[in-house]
Length: 341
Ligand SMILES: Nc1ncnc2c1ncn2[C@@H]1O[C@H](COP(=O)(O)OP(=O)(O)O)[C@@H](O)[C@H]1O
Ligand SMILES: [Mg+2]
Image 1 (tube, rainbow, N blue to C red):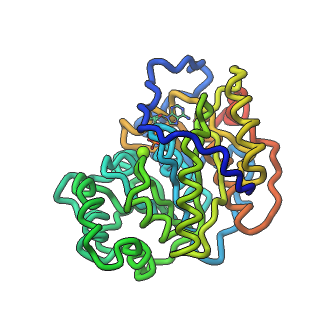
Image 2 (image 1 turned 60 degrees about the horizontal axis):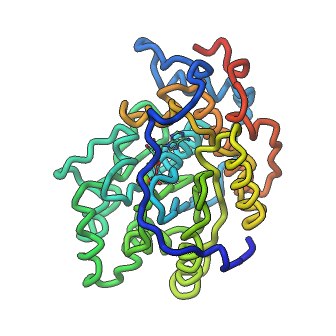
Image 3 (image 1 turned 180 degrees about the vertical axis):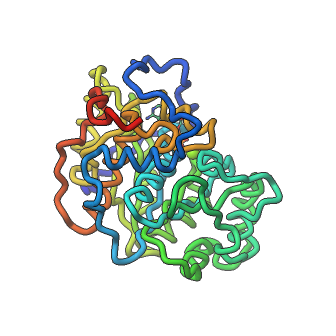
């Protein structure tokens, strides 16, 4: 990655995410949600098979890859990317843990994990040194996928952590003490660069930055990159930005392709060839406590996350990626998934 510091812009407050109703998308292209009598995990498995690579499997990393999904802007697709990539990797055969580090608990909700105030959560792990294993729950319908939920208590952790010993490395310690075998840990960060995000950066090796293909996409990223450098310099020498993912890409607008070009010229190879299209199905899935992979396995959103997961898995083991399907979302994918419903 080029370390251009000049992409820094003024710090922005979190911006609200786009609203579903304003998405001008051709919904008719998408497949209907799965029927009630179809086990949804099975339907999602069929989507993987529809990509024509069933049985081929994906290489699993030799060691657990801990990926920090961060961008201090709100509404850029961090949570959406965390849960859908995690589900995709699990459907490709990996064992994956999502750590919800945002007090909003949106990742927990999207994975159908109960996270009311009494549920043992990542707050207990960070503040009370509770073992991670005691808060991890299996995600319904997706084999191999697990979640450490966030409860609203976590909002106070940012302050409570300040006075604790080893306040920056509490998540790292918890992960190191977790004994279950895992291929990936994906950490969903809040839209800020406070102690919660610092804990994630100290715990991970890789940073995955989702970038929304909108005006000002790069604004504020300089601050995140400087924080990554600081953490690497002082606390975690292995940390690096490994992956940039373009989200909410609308191939019909010139702005989206201009932003994509700009991001690619700043970051080069770190930018995945696969981008995630704007998709109503992606935004609907969380309200059913599901990822798009189980909610509508044949949709362009599901297929593009499966493809991004594939690219990430291959990059991790140094295998070159065949980008034939990288633009899945940009066109109709109906023909690819016909017959799976
Ligand atoms: N590819 C997409 N297409 C349509 N809506 C999306 C897409 N990605 C995210 N969204 C929606 O945008 C909003 C913000 O996404 P979210 O993942 O919550 O962002 P963040 O975690 O960065 O705040 C949510 O309402 C989400 O459903
Ligand atoms: Mg979020």
